[in-house]
Amino acid sequence: MKKIILFMVLTLMLSAESSVVKVVFDLTTNSLQSFEQKVLKGIAMNKEHYEGSLKELEVAVVIHGGAYKFFVKEPSTSPFKDDKELIAAHATFKKRIASMADTYDVKFLMCRAALAGNKLKESDIYDFVAMLPNSTIGLIDKQNEGFAYIPIDK
Image 1 (cartoon, rainbow, N blue to C red):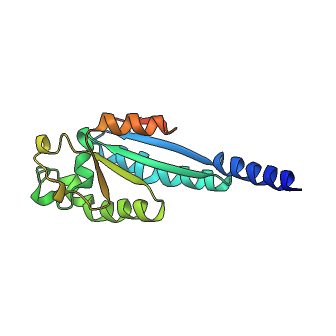
Image 2: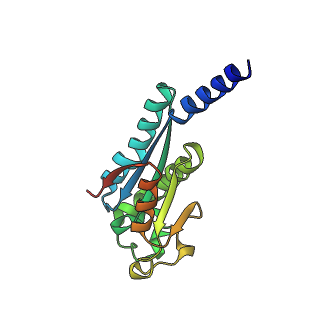
């Protein structure tokens, strides 16, 4: 009897593990349209798809390159102050990004190494964004944890 119970517990544990799908997005685009389509809308659609299949989608987004601008608390007082399109979309994007972190449990991870080069400090970035030593380390770690790699560079 103990063997049957142990077998059932192990079977349940293995099936639970296989019900989690992992993806890491390598976010470097500075395109507002691409960010909205592939991150804000795309992740939500992917989450819904996997939930409909009774699977969980674990999402991490590694931020570097031109994508810093989407995660700045106040773009109007940042190096991106002349980006009129970003300034106009900021209030809406701020709510949507925060909702993704809260509702969908998306992990936003930013490359710390290039902050200074972008004339930014950690205090300029949303609090829910975690810092990485650099983007390469974050991508290596996530891929070694079994995350599928998806670049968002355009």
